[in-house]
Amino acid sequence: MASNTSLAKSLTRPVFWNFGGLYFFYFACWQLVFTFLPYWLQGDAGLNTTVSGLVFSTMSLGALILQPIFGPLQDRLGLKKTLFYFVIICILLVGPLFQWVFLPLIHANAYVGAFITGAYMSLCLNGGVGVVEAYNERSSRAYNFEYGHARLFGSLAGATASFVGGIMWAKHHNSIFWAMTFCAAVLLVLLTVVKLPENHMAGAVSDDAKPAAQITKEDYAAIFKNRSFWGFCLLIVGSATMYDVFDQQFPNYFASFFADPAAGQTMFSRVVSVQILLEAVCMLFMPALINKISAKTGLIIYGAILFVRVLGCAFIPSIGMLVFWRLLAALEMPFMLVSVMKYISHVFDERLSATVYMYGFGTAKQIGLTIFSLFIGNLYTAFGFKHTYLLLAVIIAVFVGVGASLMKSDRKAVAA
Image (tube, rainbow, N blue to C red; front, side, top):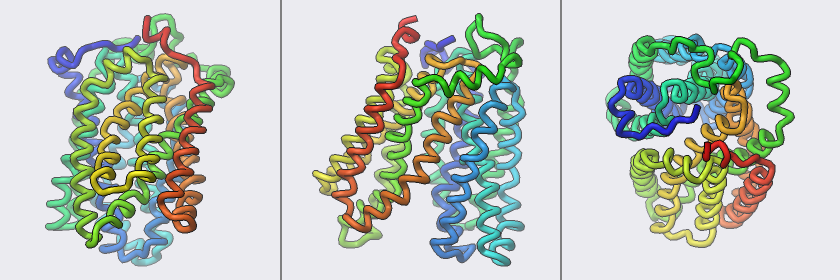
């Protein structure tokens, strides 16, 4: 069943606020880690950039291993909360682990400590995020509210966590990780009070679908025989992967236009804060827009905006225009977040939505990052930003174009 519930109606329903809260406190944890963990690794833990990189590489590797396992498992669980509880319990232990376990491990053996830290954080974030997204999207169909409207709480969490986290970090560095433990405690309460629908194993799929318990190997095999799945994977590599690859060095490119790099870094952080807030605003109307134009069209627009941003940074790199190109991401991300979930539910077997999401989005994106991060990084060194951005724009156009040509249209589902 596709949700067409208006935001005004959703705001009157306690279950909507419950799932909004789940998004808020989970992505607050996400923002805290990816904002302050690099500082902690190089400052408190005393690691160089190479060993610090091992932590993030292990987190990505963990996602490649975990998401293909978590996807089919969550589909078989339906709306049971087992995996979600597991992710929350992992986050609940972050505070004590960073203070009393990870730091002594790193001081004893930097590489072993970095690997264990990265592997554990993958359970909480890079691998665990697929469980959170897939469960909440399935729940949005079961409880009949727009996934995109609840997902905007994640954007609000990003802006809030960056601001509050900065104050906490200035007072005590470990407070960041204890804040994650607090967020996990709130998540535990919010998830516990969610009441499952009576038929929770089939509550988030069409009435004529088989129960989740009857998922067979043939059902899973059908995913990989579907050309739309492979087209979806290619489009994700050309858009979501390239979005992250583009962002990896963009802050340094932006700061290079300032006489004082520190001033550029401060300016960039403010631009990102504005972008996140604008992103939340765009999420308000994005579900209705995608319902009109179709999810496939939304994904193509997402790739087109990224193409324009990258090409614009190559040809018009003034400070004012670089700010504009960055703020365009506020429109770009809502197109991606809403379109990905709607396309999966429109085109593929709804019982297998978690599997399709974690393989087609999570795994494909991580594989793309593994390949292109190193490749594009070497190009920056060899040819500079402008020429690398030109090549990156071509790669985006090719992957998005080929992927879209393979993907089945979901207009009939939208019309229905």
